[in-house]
Structures are given as structure tokens and as C-alpha cells.
Length: 273
View 1 (tube, rainbow, N blue to C red):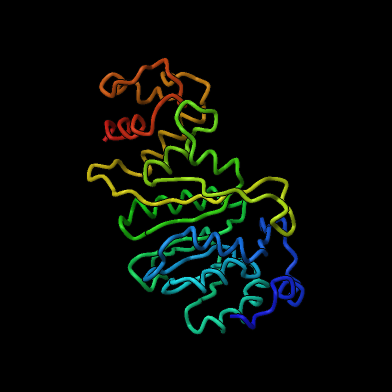
View 2: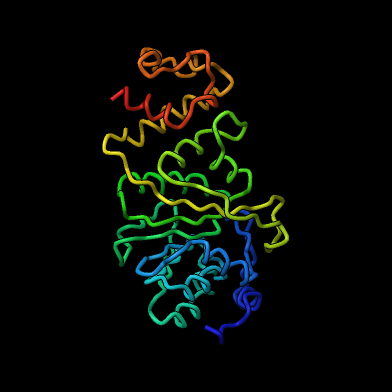
């Protein structure tokens, strides 16, 4: 590992210029990538998946960790080629998969019972990836130990927002229903190459134990989409299809979506079962 060239040399050797259309902003400071890997916690015995490794800054940190195995999923063939020296240095603990992360099913690729996800996510697909993985957590209780993911700070704030705040919304409800969430630290634009226009934040997700009578994931998705799609309207309008359940759920029809707690949404979804 110590003999690997600096990341800037890897980028130059493989003409790996960051492409805006791919949402690429490379994190080259190995102190920061190791900080992200440490934030993922104890990875011993865990298969770690990284999405969009680029030249491999975070990948190097994950290989240095106690993870049992690492799979990096990369859409850009230039980056796949650039990661081959790192793969060789990892001595069988690293696989590079050229694929679209939105179409990748992680669990069949896992070589251990538990997995973790650690990634500097491409901003343009970060939200759909998160929802996809939250559904994976719902469908496969106990399989995901943690997710340590980087988002635009605005998205991170929406994920961790509390009820009755401006940032509270669909991502807040889905994420906090299934996971304990927290913003670990922020990264300024200058930490990246090229520098984005926004600050980034690393968010940690630790899955909760699944309730035995949990409503279907799609049911909660549907309710939150309806509620926050018209967030300034009272729920008697935005959630009119559920109006017959308000009284039994103890909900005031004059409230707006941002005034309903995570538990309120789950209660409503259960009532429709």
C-alpha cells in the first residue's frame, strides 16, 4: 500500500478528469478519507461497499481498515482502470465492479453476513441511492451494520432534521424511521478536486431493530410523498385519502406535514393495513 503513487499522479496517468455529468468531485486528502473510514466504526468481519471510488482515496482507507472485504462499484471505466494497482496491493480483499450503482444489488455480492456502505456519493444520484438502501435495510433486517455516506450539506440536514423545522421532510421520515442518524462532520468545497459550490457533510446511519408490525416500506414512501409533495397544505388536503384514519391515529387535520412526527406517519401507514 505504501508504494502506491499519490492520487494526483493516478489521476494524471489515467486522464481521470472529474466529469460533472457523473457527479464526480474527488477527495484526495488521505487524512480525510481515513477519518471517514474510522467514522464507519468497527468493520471487522464486515463486507464494505463503496460507491463511486474515483481514483481511490477512500478505497485506500477502507483497505487499511479491518474490513473483511471491500467492493468498489464504479461507473466510469477510466476509474476502474486507475484502481487496478490498488486492487493488486489489497491482496485479494478488494473487488472492483464496473456497474451503475442504481442498478447494483449489494447483498448478493457480499462475502460475509453483514455489510456496511461507505461512500463519497455522486451528488446527482445520492438521494435515490439512499432510498434504495433504506429499502434494503427494511427488507433484510440485521444485514447492514452501518452506512457512512457523504452528501451535500443541505441533503444531510434534511436527513437528520427534526419535526417542525424547515428541513424536515420525506428523507427525514424514511431515514429516521429505520436508522439512528447523525451528521459526523462537514467538509468545505476546498477539500475536493474540483471544488464543488457547496459544503459537504458525512452522515452516519445505524439501522434500528425492525418492528414486528412495521408497515410496508412502499406504504410509508407513498404517504410521505403525498404529504410533503404539498407541504404547505393542511393534511386534510395533502393526505385526504387517509382522512378517515386521522381520528383513530390522534391526528389534527389542520396540521401540515412538517408538524407530523415520524411516529405519526408510521401510525398512519399501519392504520391503512
